Length: 184
Image 1 (cartoon, rainbow, N blue to C red):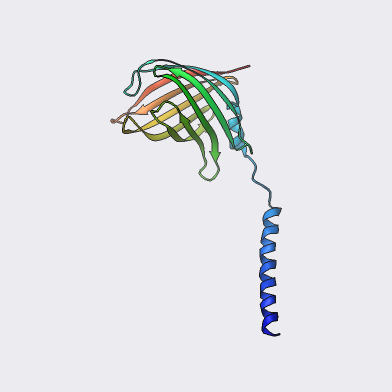
Image 2 (cartoon, one colour):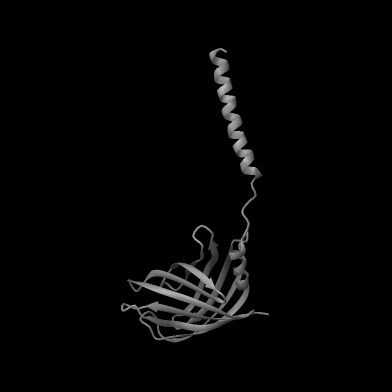
């Protein structure tokens, strides 16, 4: 074999190897949502929420209401939700995603809102039976705070929720508590 034939054999062999890799990748099935993703189905639809904002260092107490609309994001791995509401600090709009990270084995919440208090929130959550708990650390009023958001499914079309913050001494205080009802 001369040098040109050896080079062609190496190139053709390499090309065949790369092509075999592409064929194997195409033959694999695309990922599909798992049972953890399916648990998010509960939150699809239109929801109305009413809550009491408790006295706290970040906002005045009062009533809070919102209307949320949640649907599956393309692929079925996450819900995309839009919310409009208002409370002691005035009107607010937000958008958020609820998903599940198969890599980290946690539920995820990514949200933004128009309040200016916490413009972006990234939380990790878990579910035990009918109770979902999301936790995060973020800055509020220039201070790093830990918060916890708990949702308890009361029925097929309602759940209670509580938003808490951990104080400097490690104790949790309630910022907001309420109930959400699914539109029929």
